Image (tube, rainbow, N blue to C red; front, side, top):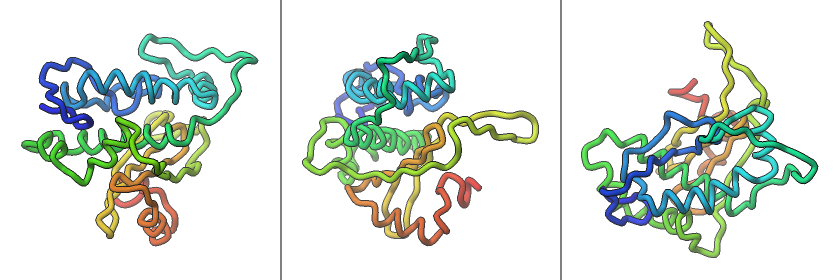
Length: 218
């Protein structure tokens, strides 16, 4: 087993990598031990996920929806907290991190999946950008509101909310996008490079429906 980000030997790693933080309500979507090494796991928690979750808007949303962190605590807001947005580049790297891990989650049952992802040179730019903050270009992402943050859905038996959801989108141009919704806001980022033309084209050809609710997910 090698880390899908830094490619180091990770057979002795013992951190459980959550594709999305537990502080966003994620318990089930995790990766096998060693998919992300302890070193990278600690880095993401401290340098990317932590600042994102502590930004004003995420503190506000987590407090409003009463989403607990892994210690069981809910953020407390006072006059010092302004609902500011996260830094754009930091948010971009966070989405890219989720994207590469979502890909690993999708193929983890395939023989030699770890070798395939680690050796896939086409993924090296996103690795370098997300893990090591390399590259002058900030990878762009789209965002739009799909449903209200307090929306409730019904499956015929009970009502439930959706703090997060994600999927991968393959376009006709052989591009791979991560599509992620957090508290009703959809984000999309190209895992193959810093451009969004393929996603814009896909949306235009599908009446601007979300990939999260189109085709196999409709």
